Image (tube, rainbow, N blue to C red; front, side):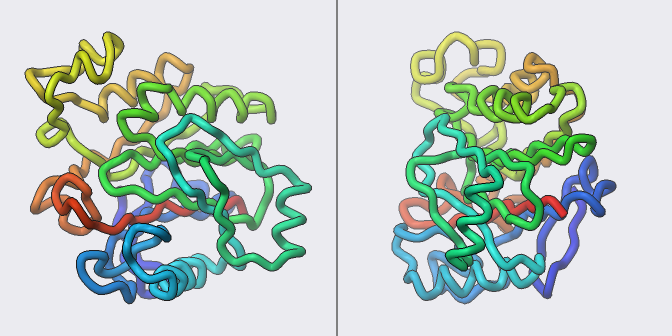
Length: 260
């Protein structure tokens, strides 16, 4: 990933996708630049986790302003494999209602081919995955913790992108800072995760980065960038929220993207 700044907010972009800046704008925001107090300091983006709604709205307003966005869709994420496709009708309704940040219930991924409509995923150790087909201008975002990876939420996103005209071989994928192999410890990983994870288990630790990468390759995706920043690591992950490092209370950082 490449470190940049948007409207004064420190954030990051995937090298694989930044070359298509005329077609897509995207940013993985750090935890800095917001108004939330500890333990949600400072650019916390989800509602309902202990931070005040007023703080979250201001943090989201700053993110939207930094990306020159009028509207953004996020979700009440539930570690499901539910994908919402934002079509022209849904986009038009949001514009008519004038909602700055709409929340969709029980959803962990979005797909759209609509321009100017921001999508947001919120994470703290889970993978925020960006999918983009530059030829067809189709965008997908997914929240994938171990439960989402086990349910293969990436396959559900790519399935919806194919319906809109994508070829998996043409889809570019970026995987955000997330839980790395050194800190992804489970009591009994094979029993908890299942046999598909067996090649990626070493003792009680699991390489979720490589599992996700191989899962995407089996789906036909050829170009994948993994940030390889461990959010649970006290040094390299300090710029980001981490549930494992900071539990029981921590904020969530955002991946936001929009088709231009």
